[in-house]
Image (cartoon, rainbow, N blue to C red):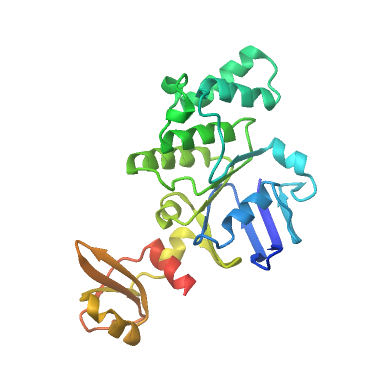
Amino acid sequence: MELSIKNLSKTYGNGVVALDDVSLEIPTGLFGLLGPNGAGKSTLMRTIATLQEADSGKISLGDIDVLKQKNEVKKILGYLPQDFGFYPKDNAYNLLEHFTLLKGVRDKKARRAKVEQLLKRVNLWEERKQKLGTFSNGMRQRFGIAQALLGNPKLIIVDEPTAGLDPAERVRFHNLLSEIGENIVVLLSTHIVDDVSDLCTYMAIINKGRIILTENTLHAISQLEGKIWEKQILKTELLEYEEKYKIISTRLFAGKTFIRTYSETNPDNGFSPVRATMEDVYFISSQ
């Protein structure tokens, strides 16, 4: 099943253009939507999830017209928004069983089996009786994925899923998403570049409501090999280098200032070749 988005546009009442003629073809697997805060990612996610209307355009999920057949979409959709509400005084088992009932599983034995299977899959079975209000950020996100997996969805949308997670929880969540994305469409919206490079075979970059790049992730990086150069400079020299070179990013490492530039040939002046990264793709595309 493929998710197809064609010429989708949305302008809010205050004049902000959130989506500007967005078109994407998203195959089975993990697809990354990368962009800064305010780029239009969440608007696109909510529109696909049937939570808001578009001004124009079309979205298809297989044979389903997403904008017209909302009930059909909801039957095969799993959605984990950036912020989702839960009952902090209830426990993971009870709440997930309630969600399973809402999904239409009336048989109590089948419902309990489904809850057990999902909580074990997201590694929360041992914490099933723990109040949700005591969960860490990572545990809450894993619980969110468990509820998104109810009903055996064909499409899962996750919006900024690793923001605020510690390194261990981020790795655990990456592994979970990778497993889920083997057989269904998983749309991962994030501003964290490493989430896309670590997980996604294909990706798109969105900025100011427009898609500025759609590419195979590894191919996008490989196209920059041999064209990225780095140099350590004094912080006071930054403006001078920005005037002379196409500086794509600046970073601090161990208190030192490093700049990266894009150049087809060796820029000399102390620059050294470095391996291209997804971050380089992002900064070059966004300039």
